[in-house]
Length: 71
Image (cartoon, rainbow, N blue to C red):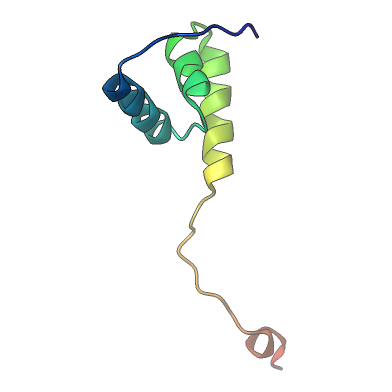
């Protein structure tokens, strides 16, 4: 990965940060990479990893140890 330095308006930086958060990315670079990546497989892989990092709520209840081992 190569690095560049940009001079951007503060509002544009805040918008880019919010965009990265909405895309479940940790930084602006990752969010932009997904937007401009033309390989559908890589896009799907990045989305899947981002979803796994966020985790899933399956709607279940937490059971107590006693309830699990009650006979």
